Length: 292
Image 1 (cartoon, rainbow, N blue to C red):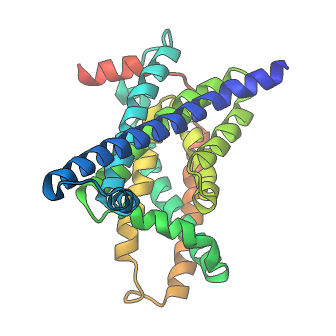
Image 2 (cartoon, rainbow, N blue to C red):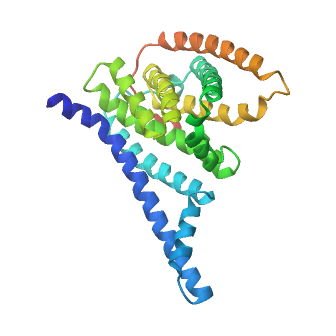
């Protein structure tokens, strides 16, 4: 029973994060439905339930979906930021320049680009073999716009990385490391990070990414390292998709080259980061030092 209780303690933050998203989405849909009803009543003198229902269905395929997703992520970021800061009260205080040295930043940037490139190669190979697996994934990417608008860019490159790191490498990892060995804690938080995406394809590569994000968080002693890696990973996805085309090289050669280079960089960056001593940092003190 004790072990079950400890595991539930680790899963609770994930349930809270998903719950926040559901609540924010529900409230947004209700508000949209009310305003849509008022607009119809003002223009036609009556409220057609079918028209309102169709409008709500279309809501998930419009820019409003991005807005709702962004608001949900922001709310999660605030809630889990406060939660994480409370967990870390009393930790050793370090300045931001002590947490992220120039060498660490360089390896994190290289690792982020290499991870995205490597995962893209694997996804392209799997997609050519099992295209049906990517139907739901492609629909989600289409809804997000993946960098096609300012809101999309902010969500993908800034809001989501910060929010997700506070949830998974912040609260969840801290909860896990209190009840299990650090190695196991990193695996569990990565699994929960994959589950959080609620999509098979995203879940699989989110698990792999989560392992590296957890490692960086542990080795740099700060969630800032994980946030930076997450930002670079997402940013690479936006730009590599537009830069790498068959106009440069045939796709097969391009994929092989990217895969080999990515693997080399991932191995080197991982070895360098693993050689770093594990550190624990109070996020609140880091934020305070940065502001001062």
